[in-house]
Length: 284
Image (cartoon, rainbow, N blue to C red; front, side, top):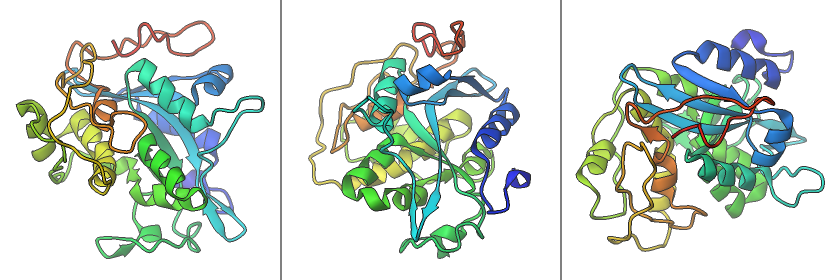
């Protein structure tokens, strides 16, 4: 996608999205939202990462650009449509809950030259945050963005960029993912195995999107003993998930994993005439 960089070293959002979606298909199936539906749902498209055996992982996605305003880097997570008091972020999470998939952002972050003035005091394996490879097109859970906005709205963009995962990394079959150790106790055996053992395909996508959310949860001062279970989602790979909110607006494990579906429980992508997904048919 480097060829789509403009003179300033940034992707053209509409063009980048079209190329990203078309080249990811058919391994990643998608349905785009019409403009009116984007205003209501806060989403640009619905994404399904599909394995050969039919296991899949769905995401409701909004695309955003990491922008420089003066000397401050930002991502407009708090965007509001005129006449609507709801933020795009809150609408995205609400719509994701209706569709029974997690909410996420795809971030267009340009090349290293574009990000040369970005300041982040955290590093990745001794590599400065802004100099990481492959982060020009990255993805991050909307729960990460929600937390970043709540802690420091002015620096939420840089914080979310730090936690974002390059699309290339989670799509690659190479390498092994590290274990995730949740705070919640008494996990079902299949869920505990998923979190602690290496994964591939759509399972790995789900795990890598969950990882920074779990890291945030680990740093929250809220109890996580054995607790009640979240309502199961039809076709979900894990039907026994703790209803642990932490300080998020939704139960984080249930939200992040409800989109991971077993073979036969995945998406049937039908659209209504105006181009938005039919909620009664998508993801059930």
